[in-house]
Length: 112
Image (cartoon, rainbow, N blue to C red; front, side):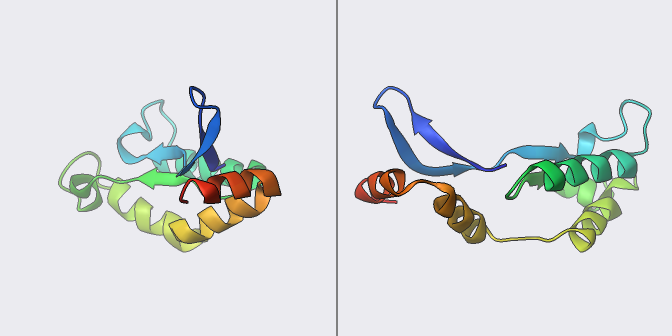
C-alpha cells in the first residue's frame, strides 16, 4: 500500500514514501455498521491486497473518550493488538526492495 512519491514536473522519484490513511476514528460507524466491524474489514482488506503498511488515525480526544462515541478509544488498541505494527523505517525498507535498481540509484543520488 505505501507508494513512492513521484515528481512529475522534474520527472524523477522523490525521496519520500506516502503511507495511505485507511481508517480514521471519527469516520467509523457513520453508515450504521458497528465501528469495530468497519475498521476490521478495512484493515483485513489492506492486509489481503496490500504489501506494506497503512495509516490509522485516532485523535487524542477520541482516544481518551473525551469526544465521539466511547467505544472508539478502546478500538484503537484492539486494532494494534490484532495486527502487526511496523516502523516507518521497516515500511521504507520494504518499498526500496520493490524498486528496480535504477530507481533506487536515482533516489540515492538525490539524497534519500
